[in-house]
Length: 532
Image (tube, rainbow, N blue to C red; front, side):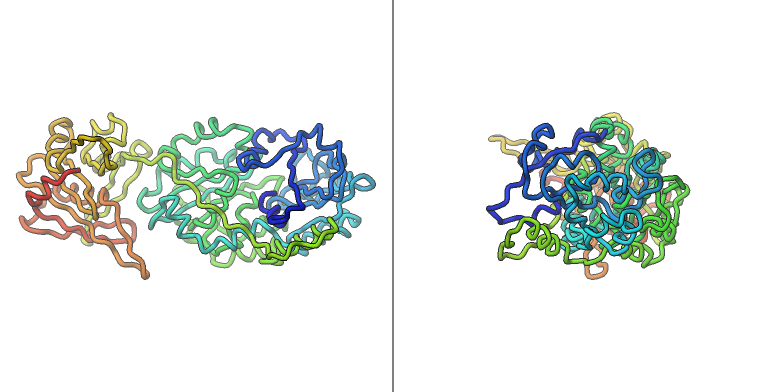
């Protein structure tokens, strides 16, 4: 509804009121987005006692005939792909079910059934010819926001903290056949398996499931994946921003995947198991039949590589027509029903807002090291999520103290500036000496300095080292590595049986398919005395 109502923006003649039709078991949070925006709500017990100039509904379910006034019925989701067991007519698409649409005849008939594709009008005509006579193809307002916001992709990725990683998004609809019900452990398995410096994980959960469980219980169920840095975007608007930012998608049979495919052509993988909800021949059925299926979490990379470009967009074309026209077409139809002339100004889709970063960022990593002819390959995984690696790298002051006590490499990032009238701060060299003294199990201690430089002290070594990772040019961009990754490569190299030369040394730090040059040299007195 909030994607549609801007067609009335700027018009002082229009007053918007919201009500919730009773009867859904998922209504607990249904008005939260309206409340957050300060929208005026009317209790259902009062909503049926007055006449309205226009009623706009996103579902035909419930006793809408009590709302007196011409009605516009809008679909929510994309494609009419599911049939819900125990509701309405058997095998009818939810949203096109004649058992619900016929309730309005003779009471508060639908004045306009706004659809997104001509095929949907044909499907409606096959089940309810009378309702189809009031149907028009106007496009999809939610897709309009996707397309209008496509150029904000870099901004969204920056807000999420994605950087040069691949953002893998899992999408779960609601009900017994959803990803979150059929594969509840998949987010945690992927978070444990995928290297943290190469992949970022997000899970989009349908609002019905959030309403059923509550945000607290949902977060507790997903705690292992969230502790590993997985994003859990808000179901209002943020989900769409995250899909625009995504590099790849893992989906069940929920229609959110069709928005992703319509806006971009990037890999899609299915985890949907055959069931009774998905309607054969629907856009989602065509999508899921045309993309790779993920059998085990361990096969995720191969499954993504098996995606054939164009498969997703071919399915999306079955769900969406009149692209770029939805706002204008809906506005014309709505104002005609109101008997008003639309304002002179043009109506445009509103850009999607930037999403928020992950609420939990791991600060302790099991680091797997492979010494190759090309350099030192580093793969970091959140501590405890998988098997232990070559060493445990821990950020002091951000991780659980038990991790710090077990760290092989302990490092510290700069603290925010202090507003204290008399400030005291460690020197870089002083803190590394303190850390090796306070944590006797630690082999190396390091401080991250500005501009990607670090100071590293190794137990038993006479000298202190300055470490600097060079940025990597790539496709007209500059890719920078987290200095903590470079520290792990140097830590592993310094503890290897093969000694390094005494002067400046360059090490190749390999992260996935990328190679970063890391310079290692003796630190100067000025670097050791630098405040942190």
